[in-house]
Length: 288
Image 1: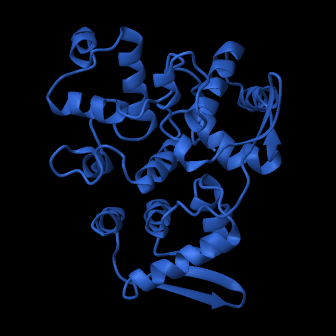
Image 2 (image 1 turned 90 degrees about the horizontal axis):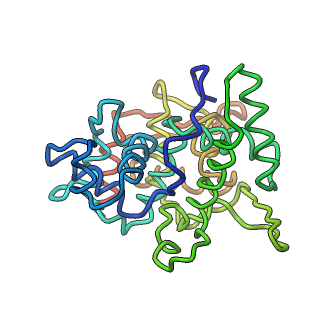
């Protein structure tokens, strides 16, 4: 759960994150410009969309509060050296999903993937709203029910194709490709969703490794922690025990000199025996 006593359920102006927005926003910053009134003209979008692009860059952990970009932002989106500036590799979408949840700038993503889905695998929008409001009340956080309702709509539309009168909008949700939020029931306007732990065949083992390293505080981490810990890959990617184990075995083959996996008295532990950082792993993954 978020480390501070505040939550954030607004800032996107009800816009889901479009496929090209992150690159567009970063290119704007890299050309020395700011998210000011000029940006409306420079980016060719309305004022609300400018603030939404800025919001999503922060929420995906690609920029900080001063609009300074991160190393991962450069690694993926840089026009000349970026590994996947147009997000053609589904591994990039998985990585962005992980950053969105773990940056905890947009609270709904961390709360849903780390907590809510583990207590209620199948849910509708109203049940999610009740949960989020209860979490706010527990922390004594002042919230606006309407903001939370809109946030739930944006959350669902980020992972599922948005219902829209515009055909163009139907193909713009950034995260729908990874199939994280399944529609389990539909009758008229009543829809139920499900986020269950399962095999994720489009999720590359190297992305799992990079994200695991990102969350490690030392050189060792138990299988149980990777599978169930807050902001760990098992929770954020909703993966099955078997898929995680298979992915770790794959990573041991790719990095035999860097990783070991031991079973000591029934406790399985992944250990970094030689320095390996997130950027190393991502560079190797994209260099394939």
